Length: 344
Image (cartoon, rainbow, N blue to C red; front, side, top):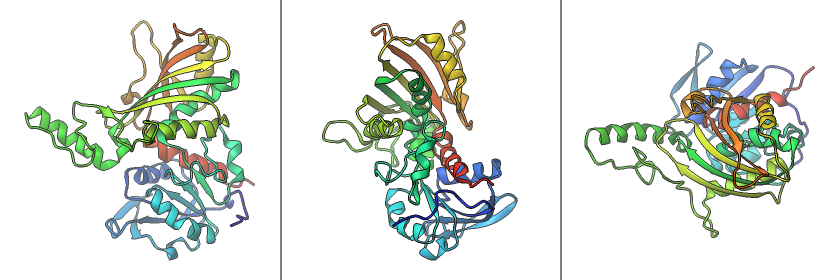
């Protein structure tokens, strides 16, 4: 299918949120209202289980409806966060009505014809879209905000990442389960998990996504492949270890970045201090650096403990935290939509 326009119309839009009742869908609605996104009509679409519920948006109740082809008629923009199979199912219908879909699932991220975009890093990739733009994985978005500006100063040769991923990455039910099972442990009970494969209460485990034949899990391979695509470095040397930790919301990452030559630490700090979407949070005397609670509900990611890798003169070490639901998902999608708005 050939898509006829790269931009959204320069008028208030008809916007559909697909997966409106999930954690990311609800965050999308909150941010649309906070940022005064130009909406003429809002359609909230979800599974039959959620249809019939109502959501308050700008002081008015909006009915959540069961998704069907007819619901996309007249829509300009679809913000999708209902999972890959749902996005694949409705893509052609959405595009046939002339709507642009910004998809938060992994369904199209590695499709060479679908832009994978972090607006602060590779906005130039956006305007070649053919009706679908992919939102990267949450850990990839947070990491790209660091790699992008540093990579503009010196070419990146290798990245080593360990992630510390909150329950929010597995959805609202996982967050509720962490709360309930933590209470059980404190009351002397044995926690029994139903949403996640193991209890996250006072515990952590390697990411539970399926293992590939190379013994890396799906989450780790997402980071590797998506980062390469965003940075347009298909051969970037990259390795990742992803861990689920007992934090409600906001992911953290320990990052080692190797360049072709030494990168002065103070210059790196200056670049990150001035980078869009990034706040440098360092109090070396107090040993105070970013924590998940610093970024929960915030648009920016926090970075700190920027230091020279003692084992490699060409490498920097740093630590970052970012809200997985907000910048790691919903906000990034809306920022993409804002870039697509046709300005007069």
